[in-house]
Length: 247
Image (tube, rainbow, N blue to C red; front, side, top):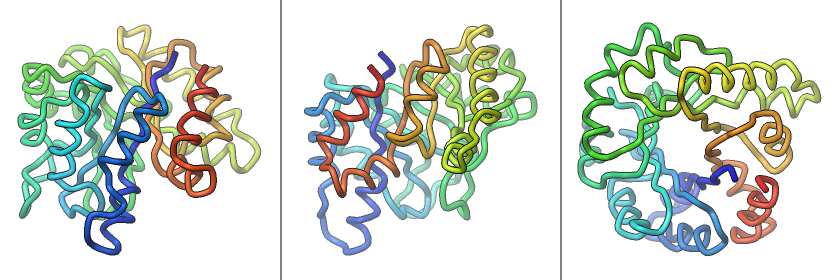
């Protein structure tokens, strides 16, 4: 079954909006794990507007040996204040997977992937270090991306397809073109020897269609919609609903 990794960034956003420790990101992780999810995702950023380095460390100790731990972020973003940088965090906590994303400080959320042909050599030493740490490395890519042979050549093991355009088209009632792009991207990546993840704006409404369309989909990372739906349905129930879709 496709692994469900729950992104807890929005729990941190809510906590940070008020200060203090509530809602508790560790408790949210435990709730998701007990409901059956196979992984937890966080995306620390230099401005620390949601998940902070201490959260990354706390979750590492909590998750070890229980579920997969996926840390996302821009490997080229410089250390700033209490943010030590993505690679430095990986050195500390040795997550299961590191998903490299080319986002900038000004982005509200990730909205594009790497250009594999142009970015591969710059990524090569970082991928090598992460692999030496025992981390699986995934690269965030756009639907319709090309050049997967470059990813394979530098040691990348997975890609994560940016599904934002698919989700937007789904909401507008005509997702066929964007779904076909995702399917073709997955097929070509798998043919190159890469496993395929997907994420961004996936929801209970649109996940099933994507899952059926992409054979062998390894993992989905879902946060914004899942946490929003959990306000009405409860966090554990929402996680179980997603798992049922993936079955």
